[in-house]
Length: 188
Image (cartoon, rainbow, N blue to C red):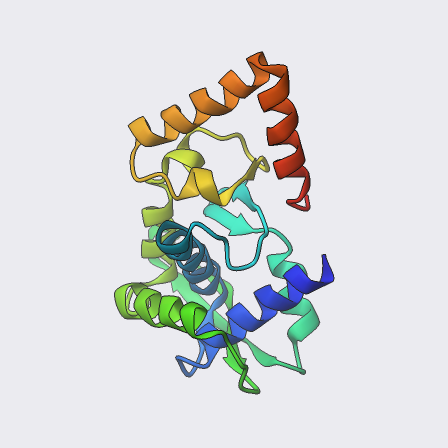
């Protein structure tokens, strides 16, 4: 598990090295879209971690723990008061700034560059809203784990075809065992 958290920390740092500072929600969504983009291109997850269905969209597992663990060592955390116009109140927003550089594999750096180019100009709220269009988020329960293969489905038809396939595995003991072995390699 430690290696996966270290990979997540490097991915976070990879995004922080692209900007002066990134608000927490936006950073979480950049990680999400990087994982989706990378999976669609390579068939592999960058971190090997699952996501959790949260109110503001899917968030990679251990995100808060890794952010907290990297404070002061890998990045700085800044607290800012911002107005929430729709709610007529102010709230605190946390932003992160890179403290160091990281060595990222070229294919992951390409993913970071593409995702930052496409989504880097959007706000955390806009990215959260975009993440709500993902079928895996729409059809999951709060706090439920969501796997990258589910998140990478491009539409509801693809998502439900994947779900049907997984359910078919349950009906076939040999396939169910193979699926179980494959999923057991994903740490929850």
